[in-house]
Amino acid sequence: MRVSAKSDYALRALIEITQRWVANDPSVVSAEELSRAQGIPHGFLQGILADLRRAGVLTSQRGQSGGWKLAVDPNEISVADVMRAVDGPIVSISGVRPESVAYNERAVVLQRVWIAARASLRDVLEHTTLTDLAKNKLPAGVERRSRDEDAWQARVPGS
Image 1 (cartoon, rainbow, N blue to C red):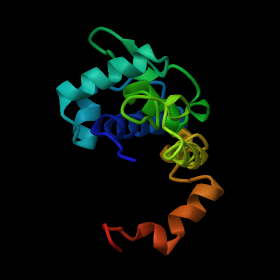
Image 2 (cartoon, helix red, strand yellow; image 1 turned 30 degrees about the vertical axis):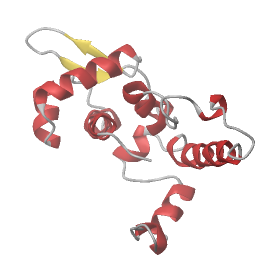
Image 3 (cartoon, helix red, strand yellow; image 1 turned 135 degrees about the vertical axis):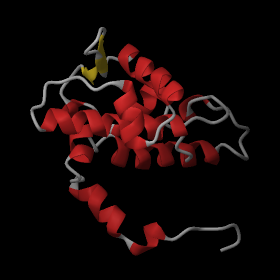
């Protein structure tokens, strides 16, 4: 799985916004402030924020004191929701969802591999919320996986 810069930037910006929500700070956050805080190119961030607004994750406020804030409770927004909002399906094979891929009988087993991989990703991404990220407290199962030494080891072809 590749995580796009767009998904990474969206999540980093949302952590900044959610930390304010968790602290009961009702103020909006400007795109400039988000860009500066996370080192995200401002022009790229503007497009991401617009995608998140269209998906119902953020609302915007115009004017002198304008900016961005969450449209819904961050406990209801998962990492998977954000990724889908900015990049589309979590797993696709050449732009096709795994359940819709067609293989001949010799390769059909691959479809089950892609479905299983999607299920594993969902197990982590759908159970981790923006609040979890903002509080730096992952769900127990995600935390357990992240503490596994083997998970931190890079794999290269042939190893």
